[in-house]
Amino acid sequence: PPSVERFIYISSTGVYAQGDGSLVDEDSPCRPVREGGRACLEAEQLLQAHPLGGRSVVLRMAGIYGPGRIPRRAELEAGKPLAAPSEGLLNLIHVDDAAAVVLAVEARAPLPGRYLVSDGSPVERCRYYEELARLLGAPPPVFQSPPCDAPAAQRAGSSKRICNARMMRELKVVLQYPSYHEGLAAIVRDERHDS
Image 1 (tube, rainbow, N blue to C red):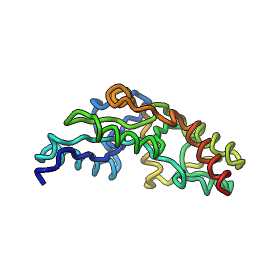
Image 2: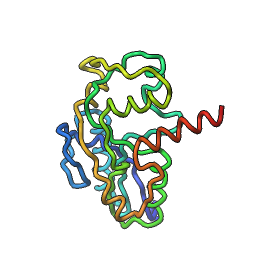
Image 3: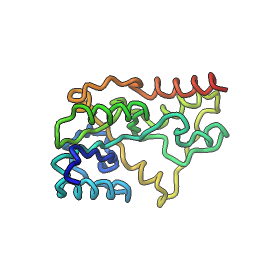
């Protein structure tokens, strides 16, 4: 309705397909290759063309992780091979920090706007899973190539460094988990404390 003053759309950094490790910001070209990234970009374009577009903020979220949301954890703990290449950059944001960004946008972001939401600390996939295995006391990760048509294979083709400078500068967000190190350690620590 016309009374809506601010519309916040949660999109994805999957709208970018850069695979060369380059730095990506809000103005980088979008050429998504995966279906999810294409759907997110199309939704952004529909919103921009709609009257709400002038009152909207788009948040392109990196990979969200947090308690109960650590992809491939079960396989890692069971010592099973991970159907993913060991190389490639992961861009992440802890769910608590993602929520803090949404609240910051609601409180102070200019309209319209677009922000990349990431902790700004991209990590090689193998390093991420090595750290997770260490924290869990699990065997070191073993990687195997996923089938060519698997979503993991498509994700693996994307290797970029998400720049969160605009988010940090304009939204004045203080990240509770500035990298996966702090985020994973807190998740595992809290799980042990609760059990």
